[in-house]
Image (cartoon, rainbow, N blue to C red; front, side):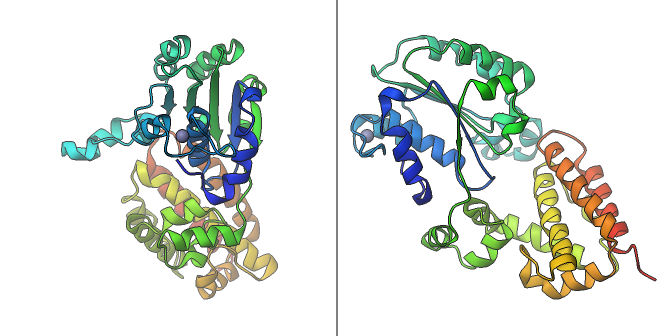
Length: 338
Ligand SMILES: [Zn+2]
């Protein structure tokens, strides 16, 4: 598991000195910069039999097991909905998807108790990865806290989170904090190019500089959803809130909210500073929309979208939320129309 280029230095610094690794690390930073990749690379490095400068060699027995996803000394806890599985192959993908949990449940944390307490298979470290840590159900957080309070020997617990402030303070205080910054723009663009992504500059701008988010935005589903939503937000007569919201399912809520927020923030930027950040390619539409917008209402909507981002990770009525937000958008952008 090779680290992302912009993470190599941080990983090497951390993993070079195995003897002094903390029991638990909380990796935090903006969404879409590759925190999951970082903690996996850290796990691989800690398990590797011959790490080079703190980075997994990719060749030893341990690295082979890791690459195949069956190393016995590492576990990864994610919300069920984020698990890569074959639900689509069951032919009822939609239904299965809806039933899956977006939170990390207490049972999932309890299920690794044996893993944590038994001796390791390869007589080295044992690694538990858990992400996104803000998805921990309160009961699961408490179960995890017990483990963090009595850390077993030779065990490394690594959490990753976009929103560390939402974790229990007692969990945060038991971990060494490691902040990963937004990668340098050149490194991000080079990586997007190397991954065959056209329009890297436009996508990276839309993603606020986060390369993995930019990569996701390039996926056909994602790109199509955004195109439709942005066309809706750019309409001079306002978005067709009811019709558009009908197409928003649970999987699309977060996309809707984050894309709306980049648009609303661009309206504010154009109004206040004359320049867009995320959607510079739609400058004419942004300018037209901000002219008829009410500044206070836009600020209020931006705050509401921040709130909604928190809710978007939890089960709720996606259609109603989408309707509500799009209607608030219409009110804010048509506020000063004659
Ligand atoms: Zn290795």
